[in-house]
Length: 271
Image 1 (cartoon, rainbow, N blue to C red):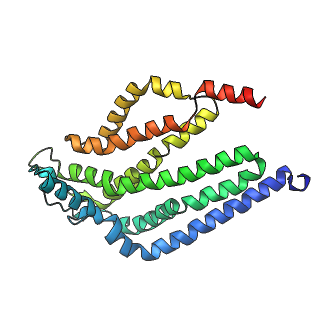
Image 2 (cartoon, rainbow, N blue to C red):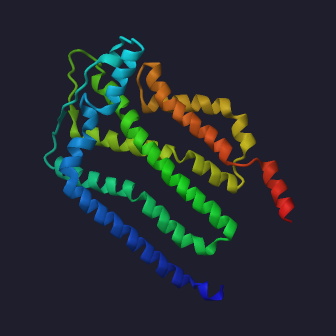
Image 3 (spheres, rainbow, N blue to C red):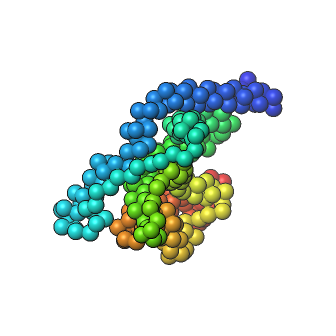
């Protein structure tokens, strides 16, 4: 054990190497995405603008199966973007490549965090942190995929077709589209980290299962409000699509943590 002990400066040196490795992976991914961006932009980033996007096909299928005639399930949808800034395409090319590299490098980032902190942990703590990082990675990508395939398309359909006045024609700029795209997709990814954050707070003794159960009703109201803000559409289907996953995350948070009494009993048993 003694040979594994590092001084303060050794820890700083190791942290420097970790940061360089992470930055190196981000840079390589960013360069790759920058090169492939013309294809990715047309087939991934702009895919929700076209009527053949997979989620719109799903909505039409639901409408046909349930014999729903509402425009929400039957309308043909297409968005044409405009650019009013001379330098915008270049900077968006760079920023989109960067953010894609950040998102896809998340597993490697968590792996480096694990490698850095694991030597300082006890076996039981090491197992818990490893589990938390693994769950956090999976949940983040589930949130990103849900945001891309469902939440953002719903938001785009509503906001792009909403008219304040018939005299005002909606023309969506490239900057506006990308800003909302990145914000919603990343926000959904971060929202899916709720169980992990709750679990970490429970380890610090700040949150307990009984507390979350007690305020479940208030949580449901807050979740509905957040869902309404994320997708400000008027139909209950859209609200449900966003609110249900968020509520399930809340329930998953309750399942993941232990109650205060259970924790105290375990400590007494260990003593």
